Length: 239
Ligand SMILES: Nc1ncnc2c1ncn2[C@@H]1O[C@H](COP(=O)(O)OP(=O)(O)OP(=O)(O)O)[C@@H](O)[C@H]1O
Image (cartoon, rainbow, N blue to C red):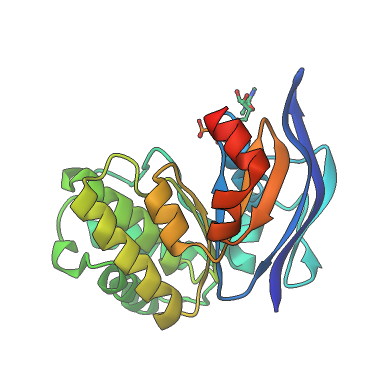
């Protein structure tokens, strides 16, 4: 079943066409990868889906409900959450308090502090951060902060989670662990993920389907194998 339906989305910043007529659908429970060089429009697309950026044309529908033009907080409560390329935890409060804030803010009906605490603890457990719950968020390693970003997205109760370069800056071992965590999460929490990732091995390993963008233009969509063999993709990537 389709969870996200993007039709004819375009976005320009002055003279720069960041997205040109982008259309695709994402199946519920799948992992959908976005691939493209720097400036291809991947982060802009996440911004359009999560409500931070208003497209010039086109529509975004989540579970058949058109969400184009809604505010980020409304979209979060509908069930879409995102992480950011540059991690932004509340550094001066504990890891647990960070996820409690998300749980109080998001789609899940956590009306009391106790409910939010429970949801927050479950999110930390899911990303392997339960032991760090009482640490200050700013004291976590980069890998820990990336995991906290994911936990914050999960704690909102999101069904669709947009992950923006959660592998960037991690060591090969940390990347391997992150791939395992995401594969497990998808099944254990019945989540749908969209991934923006420059770590190609991880993107290929995790994604069911991948959309390749070049200067905002969709050039190919398909399975990782189809994308790796696509002539247009090879031309753009390897000349
Ligand atoms: N707020 C903005 N104002 C002006 N131009 C912008 C803005 N946001 C993005 N752009 C431009 O739009 C284009 C697409 O940028 P975007 O950040 O979406 O690419 P990206 O694929 O996410 O790149 P990266 O892999 O480097 O994160 C780029 O040319 C970028 O300079």
